[in-house]
Image (cartoon, rainbow, N blue to C red; front, side, top):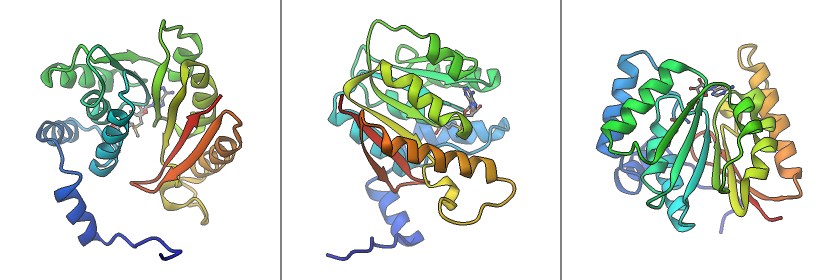
Length: 220
Ligand SMILES: C[S@@+](CC[C@H](N)C(=O)[O-])C[C@H]1O[C@@H](n2cnc3c(N)ncnc32)[C@H](O)[C@@H]1O
């Protein structure tokens, strides 16, 4: 055993992507179309996608809440891994993105599993009263909102369910000086991580894929 993790070189990363985390052809086409219409490529990577699918399948997840859906890459990824009759509830503030997601959901045959709500996620989650509990909450919207997304969605999550927050390594700047451009976002993620690990209701870890995913199981 080594105390330090194995460094994933670009070559090893390619090896992993070609074997363990192959990208679904529909998702590849979808992200290319998104880029063509000017939606920035700030979605999860294929390794994160495969991990999310692995995890959702392992808990036989039915209901997923996604905060920040962009062009639907992670939503389609997750919708492919949940049980029949389940759904991914997508919250997206940008109407153009929300329409793009609906179109992609339809083209992928997943309209029955992807429900898109256009508007501010904080307002939506605060007022949402579903007749079910979520198995999984994926937070990937504005970084300044992460703490509120966590606090507002916790009551909607079942005990044993998981909250997962992307970019927990703050674009690689979690422990280094921040550039002026990202300063506010890095500070927000640092604050969020501290709050997340201190939550008594959560048993937490950080998965170092992509830009890091903070994950917490609701234990009470
Ligand atoms: C990083 S992208 C999401 C990527 C997506 N989860 C994926 O991996 O395919 C962040 C998204 O959050 C959305 N967003 C930002 N602030 C929001 C808010 N207050 N409510 C809802 N969505 C928001 C942005 O419009 C953007 O599309």
